[in-house]
Image 1 (tube, helix red, strand yellow):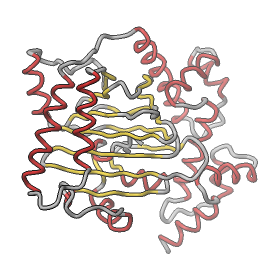
Image 2 (cartoon, helix red, strand yellow):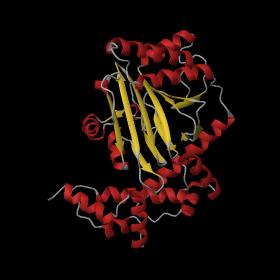
Image 3 (cartoon, helix red, strand yellow):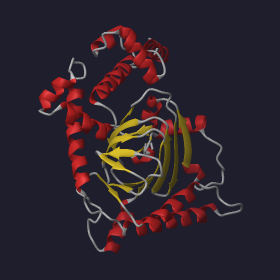
Image 4 (cartoon, rainbow, N blue to C red):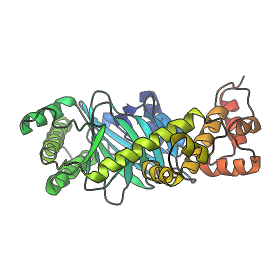
Length: 352
């Protein structure tokens, strides 16, 4: 994702797609690894594959810079707990909702960077997402993350231990919380252990029980030491993010209209400088580039629509690309193929 591309956390790899792609893309994995029957590794090279591999009714992943996309998604399921690992080489915009039944805890290694709900996060933080939370932000190039998708009774037990009902309801979809460093390190160790091959002659069922107990104990120890004091910078980031989302909604509603960024600023009663600042923090790019990416992705979606009587020139013109040669260059840089090739692929896949 897990891209923080959280795989099952948003709320899961599509089962049929996952099974098919796991056969095609499975890496060399030990058959005696934990939960071998419930684990899979995918290697993906296209944002559309990524969109299908990570399911969610309103999920949208959008590559922010040109270049070949390479993503690796790996998941292990133990009972009602899942853990996902993900790496993506390109910066990606992510929108969607997480599992409505379970909580998601994100672990970020050194050198990975992301911004969720306008708040930058780093390796010192645990990302605590409540059930059904909105995942909205962007991840940097070479983003690497691990996601723990935990059942609600785990969190309820931890709340009882801290003797504070609603201890993990932060008033927003997620909180970048700071646990005790040693307990944070223990949680990382327990997470990595789940992906390690089992020792020779070990009992798989007993090993899974020990791994579950270990990760649960380490998670509880980390969460009861949280530093969740609100910071002024977080409130400011949330305010900028809220405004950027309003501007994004305005763009999407008028995606086929010739809206300029200056007109957008007038409509929202804001300076261009503030809009640039809000977009950079929330989505990792400028408003003008983001609008162009939205339109390029919409053209691609139209060209891929089964049975559509459409042309490259027609769709490009519908979304404001008046210079077709420049459009074709931008399209190929972003998606790795020409718009005519996209249309031809769609017709080959869906012959009349």
